[in-house]
Length: 116
Length: 116
Image (cartoon, rainbow over all chains, first blue to last red):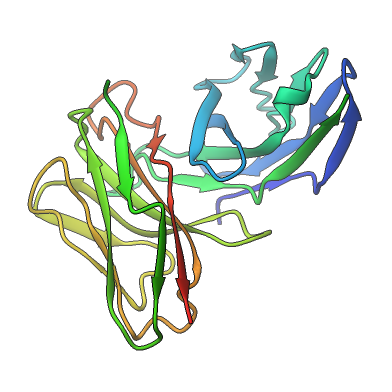
């Protein structure tokens, strides 16, 4: 079945370090891919998205490129800040699934802690 | 401001009692979703609704019920049949199947339910 696999956390970095959170997916069709972020005690916020192969999503210094050949959508940021400490979720959505279009399949999340 | 509201933020109930969680959106979205979040398990889909007066079971619907009588409202009832109801519950909405941005889901702040 369709699934998303994220690297397990927690990930602990020092401020200004480079961040990579790996995400790979399994899907029978052509999914849209998303990264969501969850700050402590809050709901999820959409961070970035990509809807087709080779698209690059970017927002707030974060980037991810939709790689069809490696079925990956790794999240990167060049210089993290303490305020980036949160849980990051990779997700996919498959169109045309007969009534469940738009349903998201989430990875288990990766907790990031950034130390000053 | 447009968004999704969930109330209350914290909810405490005794075992054996039904409890209803509120979710309201003013984004004029057609589709709404309920997720359950447990530590280390990511998000799991409970119910979803693509249109008013229609809803579908997600992956873990047992012990839950929903209604969708109005476009803006999608309340979730956690019944006494749910064996392990203590969790963080998240409501989300999206524009719907026929929108070009239909697969972006917007989340509420969540309700933390504790049953003792």
